[in-house]
Image 1 (tube, chains in turn red, purple):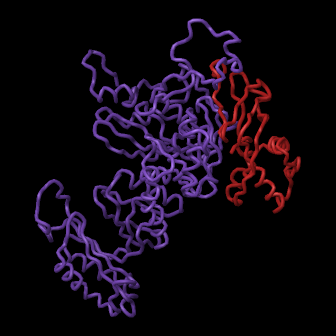
Image 2 (cartoon, chains in turn green, yellow):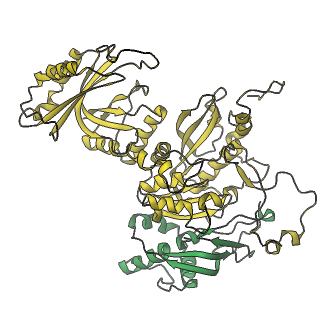
Image 3 (cartoon, chains in turn purple, red):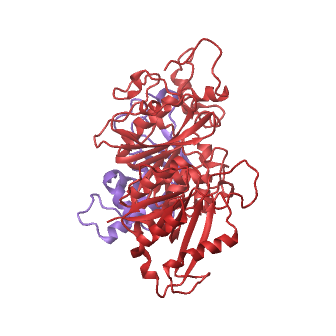
Length: 123
Length: 465
């Protein structure tokens, strides 16, 4: 962990950070690849919630170019295999996620991000 | 055309029995009607279902089901049972020829002497089963149960009161409840990583059933702690996110794989723990709402684990300067730990429901424990926590005497989209929240009451209700 599916669901909610707060930018990351079996039921559940451009951008930031810029019309097996890999098998274990708007740094330690806000950032 | 099935239940967590049945019936689209006279203080129940498949589905998933039988008869006397069994001949006549069988006679709260067991078996000879008696692998097992009143606390002879049963039940065994063995498998004491706030296995499993956890679903625990609720929900096929304001609870020792993942690995579900996060759920980083099929959690009551949220209890004497605020300039190179303040239970509960309404998909469920003070609890305590579009569908008490905790299941009945709730400090004035009614629930200031032993103050001050 942090998986890219999760990264796609996270935004910066520091006080006043209401625009350009998604997606968070990776910084100084250590990435691990871990295979896991595919799960069509769950993929079907989560796909409507994905922000496609952000997902593609994050994958490319980490060196994976298998996903197309736009979500294709036909979801063929090759595409689904690549999507599965990007969403579930790329793990950001160390490093940080940074808000492009307020620059808050969310450190990732041992696969768990610290997303606590500072005192002046809470509403 | 419905058929009757005889269920035997574990006689524990009685208030959880019917909500569990109803939940699993909903999960599997099983038509189930609970009889109006259903009495959970007794271990046997006859329920109407459309088919044996439905009975099996319940027995495979409900933690409190010990076994299920095709129902043949019941009565206060054996004569009544014979009569009902004869009337139900269409259920068992196919077994008369060529079916090997064995007969088990047993009792609840009693031990029947072997000699009378034999007499009872012989008394069913009117069924005229022609097949062989097979103790080891019979084609069918017939079961006869005598229910006795609990003689707990009296010294008595082993077979005293023999024959003076309250009721006797008879049927053909369909299946043993196979979910019950999960209680041992998830035993906290055998877990790789656990803590003193870890939820006990049986309750974690009952909670997972209340969420309708199933393959393909996405669940969330915002007070994850040591992860107990993630394991049981993931076991039933759900994918789980967990967060906690205290990262140490999820991690355990440093320089190891996080504790929650190690325990998840023990149960073979670690790949379905999607991610773990350290954050205050009232200042959460979720990009949008409507994500989760269910939210399952055991929020901190403030007793063993301090319930807290980000913020300062007392405002600073002088406001911080920009320099003081800068996280990067901590001289001792330690990670910045923002100040926290206590999170009073009744505020936590109303906030949780408001948050769940935003984060759940329509028809999603929120399942959580609410501690209550036995002497003061009223049902309105739970109603006033709600906001529009959230409806209580189950409320089961685990009784500890002067206090207890209630497993609350709330369904999001609305499809309306709500904006992200703002848990602003001090102001809990959400317009459509019912807590503005002025009612003070028994669980308010639970922590203080707990440490006072639930005794009321001697002073004139009294909680108005």
